Image 1 (tube, rainbow, N blue to C red):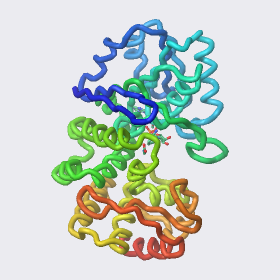
Image 2 (cartoon, rainbow, N blue to C red):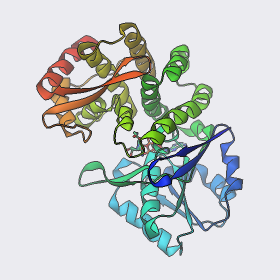
Image 3 (cartoon, protein in one colour):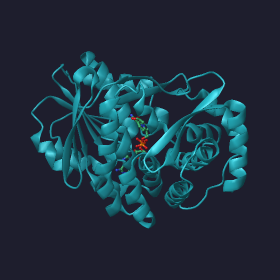
Length: 351
Ligand code: NAD
Ligand code: GLY
């Protein structure tokens, strides 16, 4: 079990991170407070007994599972449950679940009485290595993902790999998208993934590398909690991955991120003086994580969805964080026509 803190520069917020085998034992150290547990119906079904053991007497509110429920209705139902439970400003919400529970519960913790304590207990691989850390909270609104949200660091994140045992294979792959993204940005993590490329889905290996992923993300968040600059690097693989996801929607988010990394490594070859041998290794890791090349949708048709990316900085151009060498990346501003033509060519090469 490892412990460290994230001190986000802005607002002086601090999160304590406890991760690794048996991290859940740290729950016994939480100061006594009125606590409401927020989860989703799947996680509640799987972990009802553990919940009763760790949070006896605490009210539990379970949302219907899934991204389609990351809505204002779910948020306000949760805020209503908090009010019904008579929670006060010194109360605490515990978010036990994947990234959807964490994002909605985190936002409720920012809003209720203008901010109460939040403890994140992420139960998916994606939530452990990415979404529970860093203080981004949100709901989807008006058909736009994460349109309404707030930055609020959770007071604690308790990430225990015990939850991976019940995760479907698809959810493991989903988390691998973010892990390979971190590997493309962090040299030490890249080496570890390269050395273990044939056991990327092995639960023992994943339990080992969660803490390094969190530590890497923590370093980025400490320097740029509100995504003014550096934190944009965490968009690697996502511009193209999101565009394909919006157009096609048959793979998981993480699988699209992995495919996005393949495309954006090729963009780096076209637009930067990159390390070709490194990019070949990165692509091999992404392919291992994917378990082979999936059917790719027509990229020139999907490209237009990249124009909707909120990280674009100029009209008519697409902003891409492209991997260039071990632990290095470049921010590219590519005119839309060139981007779409390049994606079409790259698709031919990848298939
Ligand atoms: P999710 O929360 O929908 O969970 C995926 C599925 O796994 C759900 O059906 C859930 O009920 C189930 N599940 C959760 N834990 C389980 C377990 N231990 N065993 C079996 N099933 C389990 O999805 P996710 O992939 O965890 O998160 C995706 C969300 O995270 C998206 O909404 C995305 O926008 C958000 N996100 C946020 C950030 C951030 O920085 N805040 C970063 C990345 C992603
Ligand atoms: N998942 C990207 C970020 O937290 O900034």
